[in-house]
Length: 328
Image (cartoon, rainbow, N blue to C red):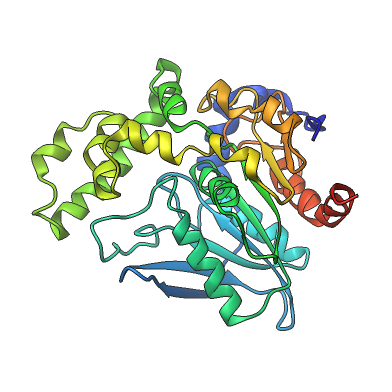
């Protein structure tokens, strides 16, 4: 597919990547609440929680939302997307990855950027509960990587999945980690490290034989956390092995449903590999949109909705015509 010519024009001070990213993450307020929480029992004995909201009892279409690193279903970017889709006729299932709903999960493992089995479990749960005719996927950052990997790594996915949108997504995990380690991203990386170490300290209380307080204290970088915990707890040799096997960049050519990747050019979290121009040009299904501004999930505009919310709905509701054109 050709690269999409973006219509996004960032207003005033929001042209600054840090302003748009920080404002969206910490200052934006969204008035929306979910009506129900579902607990999904997983095949390995663990669980994850879904936040649910319904447009109507007879609705046959649903959006599944996937959050980013150290996030959860009630972050402003998740609420904004959920609210906008529900107002436009969609049921919502907003994922909390393992241990992200306010209660630690049962196993030593938790979630990571390539844990596509958990998305599969959510899709199966929803289809067993109510046979939706149309499923849309929207993933943010780490959740976007997980979603794109899911779409590209399987020979078959449920036919009800009609379209997907990935927003501010690091397609090469290792290279994006190098970007986060740069000086201009110090505040973000420091915040991630603080939140992840807090999670590890809680995990140490529940699993004292698996990880020590001393090991956690010595972790002073995201790489160190991935070496100590993320890779070991999830069956990878080391952090490098985790990044290599879980980055979605290698799975993008195999995606077979209309998919939009929306990554701002000035997103300070992303490496050049997160703008797969050649892959998109040679794909029937991958659409790539690169606005000049927008930072990391910070596509602010002077109205209640953000640009990425507007584009996600536009793309997903137009996916039927995209499928029709690609089948000619």
